[in-house]
Image (cartoon, rainbow, N blue to C red):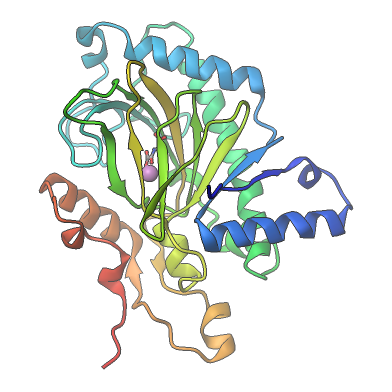
Length: 314
Ligand code: OGA
Ligand code: NI
């Protein structure tokens, strides 16, 4: 049975150990090419914060609908921060709460449980921190100096965090999140002990089995374009378990919407290869994806993806 590798990041918080680090970099590179997914342990996010965040989030989603609806997003905001429960092709049987960076004027947090805001703001900051560590490692995985992605992508204000809650499967329907690709740079997922996240590889669905104290990382669309398909944004889904609810967090290490996205020169100009994608403004892509979601696209081939910007050779 194929298995997405898990790597220990503890050495990346220390100087030295270059040989060992380069072995880990190799394992991650291989995982990014084969699956677009890997798991990390000893990532530095405090373990008691992880268990507290899962507990606080579950308790919010299990509160009465009326209380949850009080956290509905403000009207006419660029991102619907707050509690969302509406039919959406990707999230039919889940409820979710979107959070923007701590301090954002648009964030809407519930009053109950009382520690919700504090725990989520801390989780957000910790995810930002580990995101920057992962970004440096991914740069190395691509054969680039560690700071290349960070220098391209130095605006953290577009990052966002989603707390997700999936209802138990019904006899008729088990899908919790339809097959999709994530649109940012990469995603860090924290899942509770209830399995359900799967990645598609060679036509098969492979379970990303939950492991204690472990975070999941997957490559997203923007990084696929920047690396000119060296890393691929994997199609994944969530299947709901029987008889239990599942809760998770997805943190999107994003890019500024004002960035023009196209393969980095290291993958084109410097090796005299064609760029494969035409440049596009990142927020235009975000907008197109949002529009396609609201249209209830059911056929996968109709979905807007980065292939929209691919240059087809005559
Ligand atoms: C997502 C996602 C996985 C999960 O939110 O894009 O794929 O386990 N989430 O909830
Ligand atoms: Ni996803």
